[in-house]
Image (tube, rainbow, N blue to C red; front, side):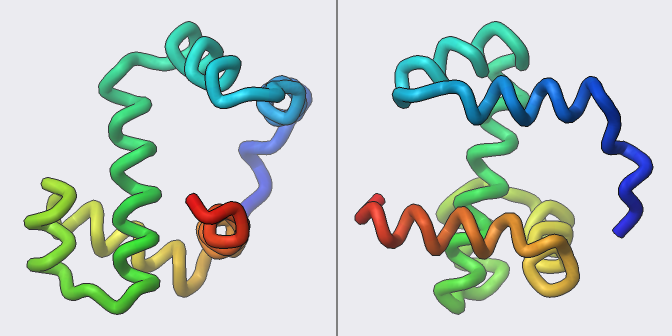
Length: 98
């Protein structure tokens, strides 16, 4: 995967996210930095990744999440060939019992 999108501004964003300590702080930051639609789209993609990793089918995932097959396919591609960000987060959420 290309790293052309990484720069000092994206470094700053990552550090900002890492600085947050509570779920409420994350909610507040997300609300200020993104639209509700963007936040919901990210949340939906994470849920799609979780359901794909649990072995659900595209129709089952589409029904449960409302995600399009294009979104499901895109998430599946990143689960299989991406930077393993989804896998890491899903493992950590599982460890936390979330």
